[in-house]
Length: 207
Image (cartoon, rainbow, N blue to C red):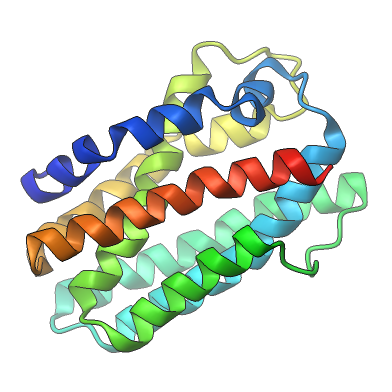
């Protein structure tokens, strides 16, 4: 992990660890998470990922160099691959992927789209990197304790994959490339991590 991205991750590691220790996330690896909670999460995450894709598209359009075009293109493709994971759960378990967004979902979507629409590209990257790095972290940490019979096994295997790690690392590379005011980048990064934790909590409480 490169320097700026590594520093921002380290500064918000307490929130990443809180996400890892959350009963929702632990229940995914153990396989004992109530299915209704996971169904709510999948629906809300699908809604969120549409905004995530739009934010990547805005960043791609405003990218100042060819490197950004290439990385944002691949990251945008990755979001649609991620949505296929959600579609699989939706088909198996009868989940609508067009839900009414929970307040935590709306807050996260509004945050990303506001930054991607109005701020420099470096700020957009700082707001989007936590999601990618956090999910790679969660997948890798949970893989070792994954119950092979967990109905959520595919979720852990997806986010622990080399492909997700590579995408997260490439986004971190853009964070270092474009940068910005360190204090503001840290504020955006941490806010995104707070919204990630709130997202898991909202799915836990909504069932």
